[in-house]
Image (cartoon, rainbow over the protein chains, first blue to last red):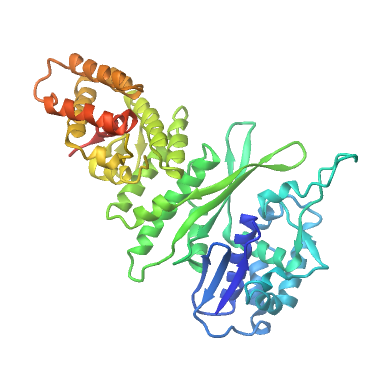
Length: 365
Length: 99
């Protein structure tokens, strides 16, 4: 069985809707549910021939939007505290009353554009960073207007929230005493193998509990998370029943506190192409371990440049970024400042030749 | 100038030879100046000058000097691939460890 989510051009919103729909399908079947990025749309596929009845599985569905989930605070951070319970109740009501209609609405590719035209909900910033600015109104000859907020059909909004609750990873990054930001990543599946819904939920818990991730900048945290993700994926791929999940990129962004409320600070795509290639390399796990050590080395005060330049290199493995990383790394090496204590050794910046050679293989000139 | 991958240049024997020289200069002689100079080269002339200084500084060390043919080969590579790729390949060798 297949469902389709046509992309609207707002990357986080589209992906969260696809994951939200995948999660609802997963609650109604015991089979595998995969999400694929097929270019203009996301496809949700299950090998099951039919779904269980919604009414008899209502508790399972409502557990997706239970009142006590920790993630509510992050998803509804721009909604005032007194309005939050109302929003949660509304999502629960939509799921209770319209679940079947939502599933039917996404059965065909172009039906997904239809939704409730009367009832619309505001797409808030934490769900889609680009929606912060809203739509500008014509201003010629009139008073300047910031524009109205962007609204979406309430069924799509509910799906988006379910996806964001269970698939987005948020982390608070303290840059300086006065500057803090809240960063988010959501993994984008590839078009051929896709991501199994429960697999990502398992890895998400692992990544959220991971200690010592780089917090030098949002991009460093995103890159270090990618390293940890692929370390875990490596083991999953080499276990008895190997995982076949394939990621194409992370969609990431960050919010920084402004005078009144949070505002978007950075955002973009972090390519996972290099990591996917290394996953199939026989030295892959050694390379990921080395990457992890480099980020740990860059976690020390005064060596932040190492983490920043290395994250830039992993995002775009060009010769320019590689050279910049080599320069900052060799400086720290010369000063004898590289010092990473692992459970069985102290790493002082040693690159094993046969392992580093595998990294060089992917540098684009 | 043709687009050659870093990996191909890195695997070149002459580049390996010079990479070993820089590695030895760094590890045995604490010659950080040579590596820093190499990092900053932009032109072929600067590159030749940096190599010359490396050889002069470590002239007395026996057993790890590059072959003459390697010098010619490296300069040919600079002509064909450009300074930045050859420079990155040599520095990569200098920073790696061979067991």
